[in-house]
Image 1: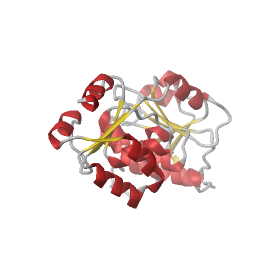
Image 2 (image 1 turned 90 degrees about the vertical axis):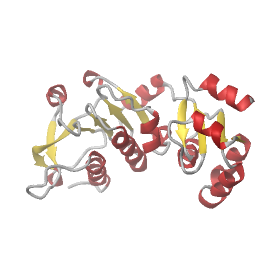
Image 3 (image 1 turned 45 degrees about the horizontal axis):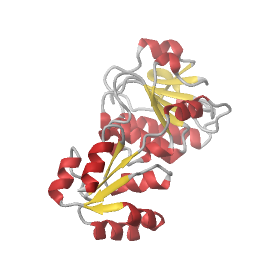
Image 4 (image 1 turned 45 degrees about the vertical axis):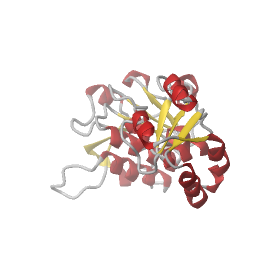
Length: 245
C-alpha cells in the first residue's frame, strides 16, 4: 500500500497531526502536509463541509482512506475523527528569526521547564488564538511532541514554537509570574514582553528568576494555591490584549 509505505518513510522526521482539527488548523496556516489518511474519507469531508469549508478542497486532494486496523498502527492513540496526517516541521531558523525580530507587535510566552505535555499544547493553542509571537520552552519537554501537538490542535503552525535555554530567551523585558510578585492589574504589559511561567510543580527556576525584569502575580483568593498553567497564560494574554492600565 503506497500510503502506508509513504507514512513510514516520512514519520521519523514529520510532525504528527492527530485528528481532523489539527489537520484543519495546519492547512489554514499553510503547513506543508504531504500525507493525510482517514478511516472514513467521506465522513471527514462532510466534517469539513460543516466546520471548515475553507479547507475542504485541499482535504479532498490529500485524504487517502485506510482501514481502521491500519489507521491504529499509525497513531499512538486513535482520535474520534479517525483522521491523521504528517506535516513538515517549520524551519527552526525561521522560528528563531521570528522570535528575535524587533519591534514585536505581540509578546512571546516562555514556559520554564514545563512537565505536562497537555498543558504545553493548551498554552500553544492559547498563544495562537491571541496572536502571540511565539511559545518557547526550557528544559527537557519537547514542544513538538505528538501529545503537545494534539493538545494544541495543530496550532503550532500559527505561531513560532521552539525549545531554548534560558540564556537564549528572545529579546525584550521578561515578566515572570510568582505569588510574591506585583499585582498584574497594576501593570501594562508591553508588546515586546517575554511572559514567563514556571513549572507546574516547582515554579520558576533560579536561572529564569535571574533573567527576570519584573515579577508579577495573578489575582488569587487566599488559600487557593495555584491556577492551571494554561489558565494563568490565558489570564495574562487577555490582560495584555485588553491594554492593561
